[in-house]
Image (cartoon, one colour):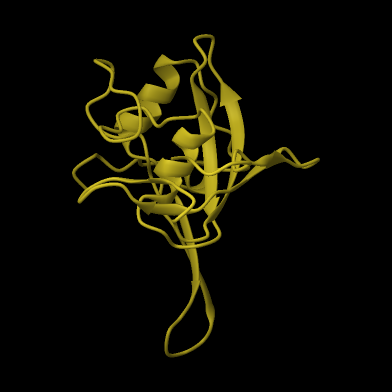
Length: 153
């Protein structure tokens, strides 16, 4: 059963902080459950389409299996194309989830590292199809790279 009081709180900064424990429901599915491990994800809606579609930025604060997918679905923002937790559509052929920026501390050198990766072409065209703007201030890789990677890269 879903844990109580886990939907998240919208901060003054527009970030929805989802604090909901995640546990295993089956061999391949995770879900929000009182017996789960603590998990926190920050979600910001960057733009919305006329049909209710949204462009999100999610920042997991913990590292649980399927955490972004489970938390987004839990707060009513399921990922398009996600066969387990989201919404399937004839419009897309892949899950609309992409790590456009990853930051971490190098395991041996200890220095902070950030890696940006532009959105694949299919995600850009899907966003355009739904009338979702891709703000360059949140997507610096789009602003600095003239070439978008194909879905095979």
